[in-house]
Image 1 (cartoon, helix red, strand yellow):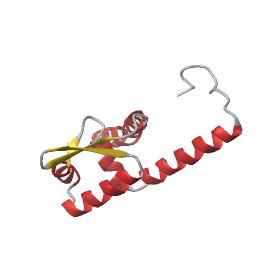
Image 2 (cartoon, rainbow, N blue to C red; image 1 turned 30 degrees about the vertical axis):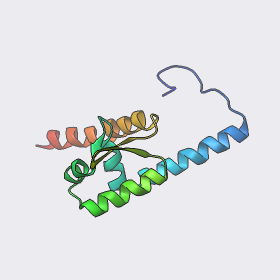
Image 3 (cartoon, one colour; image 1 turned 180 degrees about the vertical axis):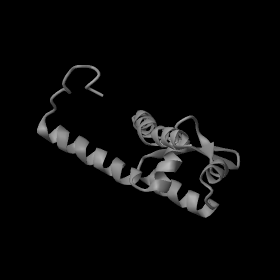
Length: 118
């Protein structure tokens, strides 16, 4: 992020850095679960229903709902009810660029490598 800007990150006071590092570590811990990471990635373009997320992941409704409940408690996703359908979205706007970067670095490079190997 800062390398392409040719500048150094702003210096925060140690207490603020500790709090920011703690929050970042909690987010990264949640992202360390492949299924939760895939769920969050599926929410990058737009909000989705549980059924749409089930289909995207190939997982059961109970599994997807359980993971969403956990991520909701962690503040990673938020939900809107539209009649009987609950639609989920990323709760923290800082997640979108992080997830997009992970996709570019890991997913696109995997696709490019597999296409090159053919």
